[in-house]
Length: 48
Image 1 (cartoon, rainbow, N blue to C red):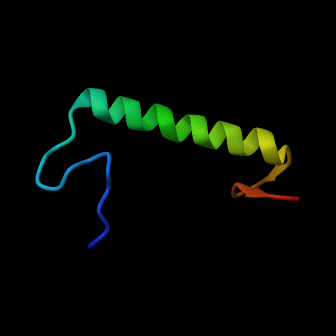
Image 2: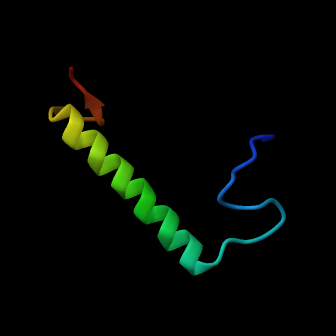
C-alpha cells in the first residue's frame, strides 16, 4: 500500500494511546454518521 496515513507515521508502531485515540475518533465518526442517517439497516447501509 502506498497510502500515507497522517495519524500513524510509516516505520513506527502506534502506541496504546494512539490506538485508543484513533478508535475513539472512528467511533465518534461512526456515531455521527448513524445519527445523521437515522435509519441503518443490517450491514451498516444507511437509507436516505
